[in-house]
Amino acid sequence: MDVIHYITDNTPQVLLLFGQHFVLFAVSMFFAILTGISLAIYVTAPGNEKKGNMVVSITSAAQAVPPLAIVALAFIFVGIGAAPSIIALILYSIVPILFNASSGLLSVPPKVIEAGRGLGLTQNQLLWKIRIPMSLPVIMAGIRSAATINIGTATVASFIGGGGLGDLIFMGLKLYRPDIILTGAILTAIMAIAIDYLLQMLENIILPGGLK
Amino acid sequence: MITFSSVSKYFEKTAAVNNLSVDFEHGSISVIIGPSGCGKTTTMKMINRLIDPDNGEIKLDGKSIFDYNLVELRRSIGYVIQETGLFPHYTVYDNIAVVPRLLRWDNTRIQNRVYELLDLVTLNETYSNKYPSQLSGGERQRVGLARALAADPDILLMDEPFGAIDPINRLTLQDVLLEIQEEIKKTIIFVTHDINEAIKLGDKIAIMDRGNLVQYDTPDIILTDPADEFVEELLGHDRNVKALSLIKTRELLQNHGYITITPGTTHEEARAMAEENPASSVFIQDDNGTLMGRYYLETRKDKSRRLKKVDDPWVVDPNMNLNETLSKMLQTGEKVIPVVTRKRKLLGVVTLGNLFNAANRE
Image (cartoon, chains in turn green, yellow):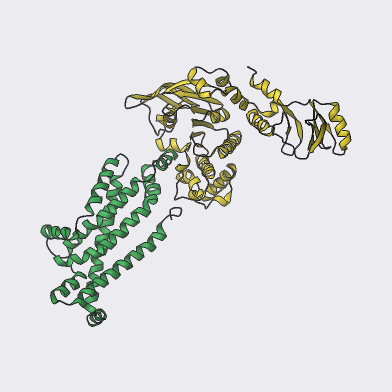
């Protein structure tokens, strides 16, 4: 109940931080998806399979790096504020997206690709008509797990002045006020759950039949 | 016609295909057969340039395959592989429509073509919206064939297309392919490791071993005059029996050795006729020539005879090959079996004696 009190008493501040948090998430995810999927397409292109397998191994290990370390590194190299926070979040979110997209694209059965080549599809057509649609379930799973991790990690951005709901958590910590900490944590969780739900709906819409 | 002139292909210094020269004839089925690693699939894939040869030349009707635009070449050649080649995220309709769409046909033309092809491969429009995962292996293979035929290519490459199908459905699919070929007369290159399939389907069979062409002949010549021990081994010890599959039952039909009686004949009259002609089978035939039944004169242990009437006797179709007819006779124990049309019109009989002579005619 303390949480609800805190929100009703400080609505403008909470809304502002919620908004900041969403912007951190949305901007960093946009670039993470863009670069992650482009990289995956590049490293899994025919003839590049060795690079692809290497990227899969590296990204699989990189998922174990703690988020605080990335944020701390961004602070050292870029400074404080929203920009370094977003850069840290991009780096951290690329990993699951790149990992899933690469392994998805590499796991399309060779027989299917051979059939496509034999029928006269160009490399581009093979990519957009066959390989990407067939790996879409795996790619979407990567994006969803990246989104959840991103929203959680964005609270750490507050540490280097990135703003967002993390501010509430750090403030609560300084003031020794569990209600403020909980407000930050619960709103972060709600955002993560809502975004995951929306992505799931999106997935149901764009996933080709036959793969569902 | 597809012409190979001194074509070689090496994989890490071993010759997958070694100095191959062969002509695959227009409008006929050429089967390439041999054990795994003999180069049969490599040979096929060089035609649509999924693999490029290291030496030699391949020509389609006199024009080198390297003078064609790669993508256009492939779109003009149908390609069927084992069932996994269908696109799982496309419906049956979309799978078949792949090449017509690449060629930018309009939608009405595509739809007509897809329905026509579904019909041709003995499926129908109700399959349009199904996904490959909802089909049986045999159905998937038919869709694969329809997809390869979509843009009406002159050449059809089939890479062990029925390899993953159970034996019974495989026989059906082979019949479907032969029926379709009667109609479309494509130049078909068919790769298999099943010698029975090769004999059944091939107008000509190319036998390969370790990259070399060992023999290239009609099934008839290969069965009666195998080039060497390797071919003999490939054919197996039963090649006389296999040779029977080259002959249709109607070619061995005989019109004597049986008597026919009308449906109105009494049991006693039938018995008298049967005893009078103990060497003959007795068939009941109506005025239209339809087979209505058969009498068997059975001898019991005590040497007394009994006349048995069967309304629905075993029969064979004139289009079955002699191998299939022989199997049926062995299964049913008939020494003489009537040959009837689909409407059960009696054409004649085939006897075990006829089959024995056919198998040993060489």
